[in-house]
Image 1 (tube, rainbow, N blue to C red):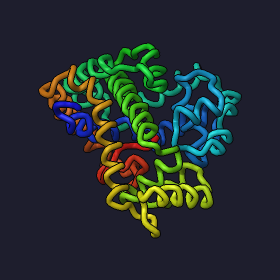
Image 2: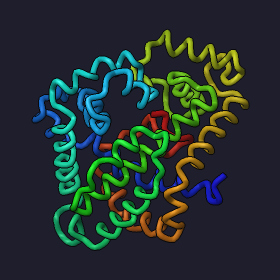
Image 3: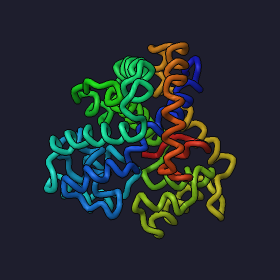
Image 4: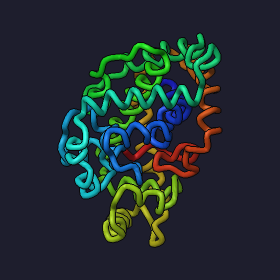
Length: 296
């Protein structure tokens, strides 16, 4: 049990939007289109961007690592993504996209990406990321294997990426330990009010698959006839989230609470600018701002 179990969650809530803007930024879609991906929806490039650190992985490997996506949906995009652009080119374009995104968001001056505050934030985030264990965490390990960029704004985004994937990989372990398969993870998360069922439809499961998972959870006394979590269901989800926080605590324990708080202070202006873009969805499958942790 972590001695400050809330710290890992607080830092995740603080930092995740700084990374997640990537999935909605027009600068990122411009880079994706230049590579040749269909950008009418975000999914063709999403699977390429996020899976590229794993190399030219196949559908089974990506489904296993991403966990909560329907394998059928994954197979629509992987390995086809590597026929559009190989992972190495995708990773090069990913850094260009982050650079363009943060320059548009923050500007180039001393109050933006050239500022001392951002440089200090990047240094602290990198220290936390380098302290994060990647044992049993395939996506985090693959990102940690990538070379560190030179510029502070790129270091910051990459560090947050390692930390969020380390947390996500740990969350998958927590779900497995608590007996929740990929679709049950989503159904149980929706059942505690993390987001609407319609929001979770983006993960590609059919209505029949969702209903079957709900029936399995009901048979275990975890949801009621309407699909809402029972007391036992809420207790189980609370246990999953506590385990996730404990597994994500190591880098923040190593960094220390004072430096973690300093990182939070330094990145708060960036978080405000991210939220002011209006690009982040009001509801998301991470449940940020509500309850729970991310079903990846």
